[in-house]
Image 1: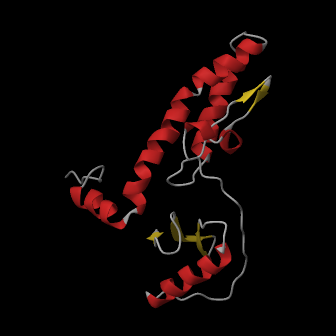
Image 2: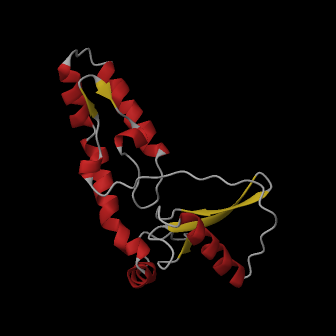
Length: 164
């Protein structure tokens, strides 16, 4: 994982996948490709060696800024996962939210309720997911501000402990 507040307020990554090295990040919409190229240059300064580009993928991610960005739907339309705004604002990961969200919706559909009560029940049962999005937003400054991240890492909070 790479953090560079001069390039993005999110993180970037490098990983091996199917015999390839994948290098990417989440960048603000303005000048995203230029920011990616700058990150790549900085990584090369640290010794990364990149070969020929095999494939490029780009998508837009809307980071939820608060619980108001989460919308479970209305009038018999039920949104789940990223469509509902259930995505981690700190990691931009959404699959675990989508799976949990889909399970909640299946419970609501199987409850025997009908009509507009389904909308209300579903909205109420997704409260915990909205709370997760809210708490992850509180976590953001500690992940993406260099000095705060240093203090958290130095504290050992939530670190893995080796037990022999």
